[in-house]
Length: 54
Image 1 (cartoon, rainbow, N blue to C red):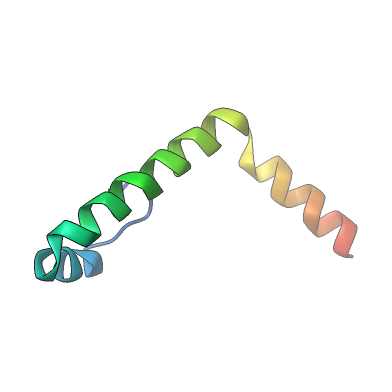
Image 2 (cartoon, rainbow, N blue to C red):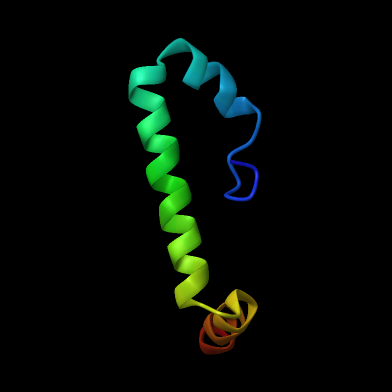
């Protein structure tokens, strides 16, 4: 979860409603990992966006 940017703040929500939150956490982590596979250098993408905006 830490790799995907899900911090310790999410633990209390997950503990309160695990049936709903655990699948959400799994899906969001899977999206993050797949996004990393598709975008080899995320910094290059950000740089392109910033360049177009300026």
